[in-house]
Length: 96
Image (tube, rainbow, N blue to C red; front, side, top):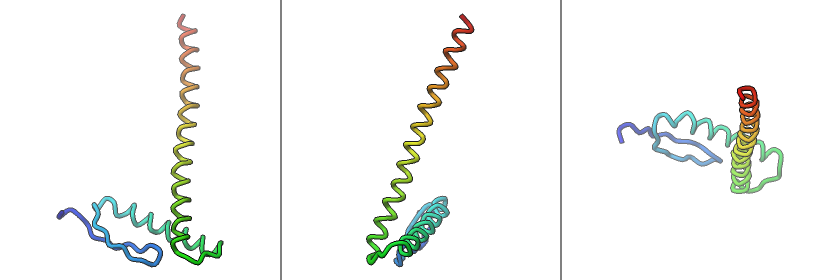
């Protein structure tokens, strides 16, 4: 456990002590910063009384972004596969 790093992250006015691998620190700090910015945005845009509601909204938005990236990637893969198949057909016709 000597190669572990102890850090504290603040999210939604709470401090969370974590023991992590050093290579995770930057990502965790950036994620906490994004969450804090999103919390601030939701609090300014909506009449939210409870931090739990704001955190749920943040979680939903982050999850939706991840899912949308998966959908976009799948769509790109289908398009690339179609183009490669078309090129393959053209090459086969040319070589025949």
